[in-house]
Amino acid sequence: MCGRCMNWLRRVPDFRLEVADYASRGDTVFIRWIATGTHGDVPLRFEGVDCVRHSNVQVYENRIYCDHPLIQALN
Image (cartoon, rainbow, N blue to C red; front, side):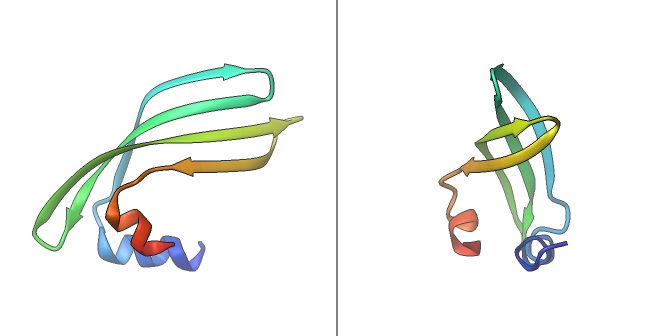
């Protein structure tokens, strides 16, 4: 697991993602997700979108769009 992921899970140990919607066209899949968890004593709930491009069952690009401040702090 990457260092950023480990850092995220230390801050939000009960982190969960739910797929809310998805669509695809050609080699691109859009996934809208809802994240929940607890940061300290503060409950979190925010949404984002992944734009995943693939070829022959291999992902070659994944862009994550989310403007929550906690996500920005991890980048």
